[in-house]
Each structure stands twice: as structure tokens, then as C-alpha cells.
Length: 237
Image (cartoon, rainbow, N blue to C red; front, side):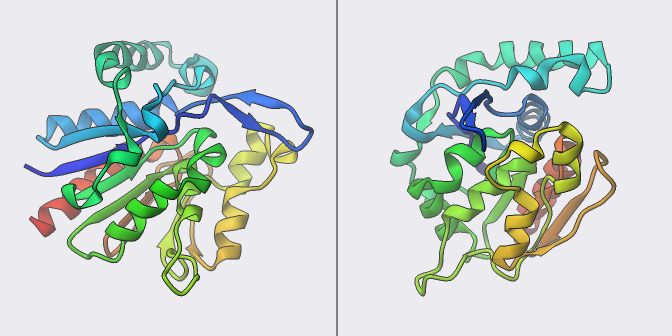
């Protein structure tokens, strides 16, 4: 049985350019859809957070307005979160995790990762162990790729420089109305760091697979990303 470490943000607020703090957390769909698909496929998923703090879903991700007006979809997400509440309430401490125990890592988004995972040394430790190992899989969704900024090579260069990937685009951030007040923008910073960034149409499903690196652009990419992860795990079994 394959095993995946799922790292969730434990941030509950996101610092803004004007000094304000916006409530945040992990994005509901980006946790629910991959977690469900992976576990249904028999993958053993371990949830971990910095400090073992209880993660929270961004409430903004669990309203019809951010889910295409689909009330049933929101109800489905909330119901799933309730079913797995016992897992979310007792996450593993990221500090105690040995990445060698896992076949891969998946980091969902929400603006939370921009607050804590982007600068977390234990995220860096996990990524620096798994990404260079072609028998392992590293995956991120949407703003989850902010966590990639934590990780460097022994020579000081960025671990993901030159890798092909996608993430939440600056266009999408602008359409949310949050770009102007953000301290930094994800796509801009990924490109600036030397990643080979590509994207599909705003809000559509788009996934990039570059060797053992799987990245999804936005919440709609969760299903395709999870299926790509399963394919990559099977290829390495």
C-alpha cells in the first residue's frame, strides 16, 4: 500500500500589504477531493501540520459563491470534512515526520501556506528529501506551491529552479480581488525563482507533471492532480 504525507497549513490568518489579517486556512475542495480519491484508491494518507496544530478550512472556500453557486457541492464538502474531523483534529506534528517513511507528499492550498509553509524548515526538510528521489512523488495544489519556497539545495540554490510546474495564477488572484493587497503573488515569485511556469485558462483544471513533481493550478485541478499522483505512485511501485 502506498503512503502519502499530506501537509496542511495551520495558519488561520494571512498577512496583507495594508497590515491587515485576512481569515484563512486550507481550501476545502483542495483537501476533500484529493483526500477522498487517494484513500478510496487504498493510499494510506497521513495528515501533518506545523506543531501538530489543528488545521481549519477557510470558510470562504465553503460557500456557494466560491463554488460556482453549487449548493450541493458545498454541502458535500462540509459533510466530508465532518466525516474526517477525527483525522483533522489530531494531525501529526510535522516536526516529528520522517519523510523516508512515505512514498510522496501532497500540499493543498488556500492562502494559509503563503503564511506558514512558505517559510517552514520542516516543510523544507520533507521536500529536500523527497524531490531529489525519483522513487518518490511531490505534489502541490494551487497556493500549496508557496511551500516550495521553503526548500533549497545544499549549494543554496532553490530546490525547484528549472522544474516545470503550475500554481494559482496572478490572473486568478486578481479576479479574486486580493492581488492588490497581497504581500507577494505566487506566480510572479515562482517565475522569478526560476521555475518553468505554465497555466491553463483561469479557474479551469490544469495539471503539470514533471518527472516526480505533480502540480495543479487551482481548486478545480484537485481531481486531475490526485489521479496524476496515483499514476505516478503506480509507476514507482
